[in-house]
Image (cartoon, rainbow, N blue to C red):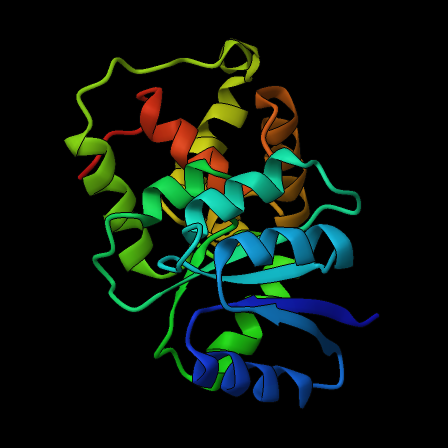
Length: 220
């Protein structure tokens, strides 16, 4: 199957460069692009791509608000948003994950990493493997003084499911969790699915945010 991609970035060179790179892949098709957040939201609602590469900082509407508008539209099939950022200390990444983005990618990432990121997100997973992502989420949560919110579904998790959630929040892949808990990778995948369903979450990115905010895991 072909993965359709939409690119939103205010820099024409970024749009053209990423577009050419992705269009060269046999399983990826670039269906459109936009130079500002407001136009991106309108075009994504019309084109319904599988994945949106969304720059954090754009005119008219920033990428976080655009991602939130796209998620709030509850499009079907679901659209996955992958945030693009220039700096690995971007304070907006945590907010982007809370808005429903499935992860983030540095603009200067190698070409093969960009292609892999699109495939990972299109497959329904979250791009959380890089250690920088875990560190940024931890620091963002550490700085927030608001009272923690505990999802009602958290009490419904079995001890094993809670354990799996803790490992997901630490940034481990299904394979790594399987090794740590001496389970099969398929069993871990099943547990992750149950955790997301009970907590009413879209993907692992949201699970990480909830785990930190509710105190299931603590920064550090």
